[in-house]
Image (tube, rainbow, N blue to C red; front, side, top):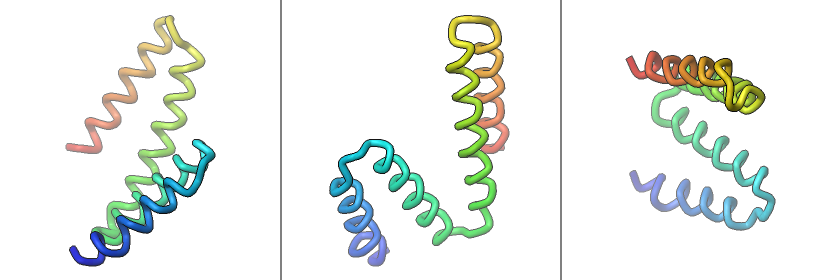
Length: 87
């Protein structure tokens, strides 16, 4: 759409490249992505937010249990959760 090409994309990229802190850049990408999806179809935003935080939590658990069976189990759970959302 014209809004996306002329306003949303330049503002998002501008904010991303103006901010030097990597952590803040990631937040900008996440927030602009959520705004983009909410603009297109607001009904899915709740699922997207819940999925984002669940994936973040599971990634922390995978990192804590790297190299053992618990980490692999959490990884399989994370993949299954993401596939179930697509179904």
